[in-house]
Length: 105
Image 1 (spheres, rainbow, N blue to C red):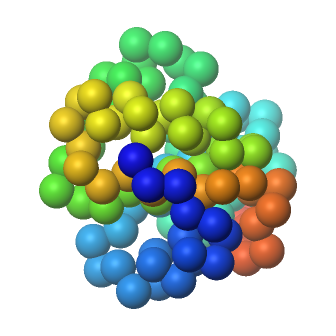
Image 2 (cartoon, rainbow, N blue to C red):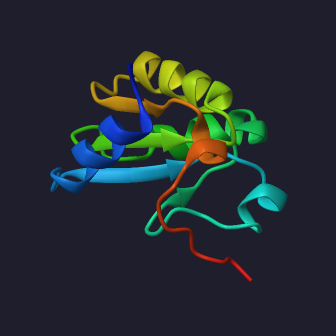
């Protein structure tokens, strides 16, 4: 797992044609806004989270975030255990995000 600052995460993401963004927050948190094009997979779903993650294409590059960077770090570790080679954790999470958010209402 690679931990990236907000600037590194965004700049790497913008230049990555193989990128997938994953939001691992709860439904209530996502309702407050989500990074555009992100897939929402709640880490608190336990085995259902692992099953959903494991079904993803392991050849892609995954940019993972949560509220503060803690749960997304855990998610990246789980992804590595499942055989994903490129999982990038957003340090500071959405709390420090300065980019666009999409309203989920």
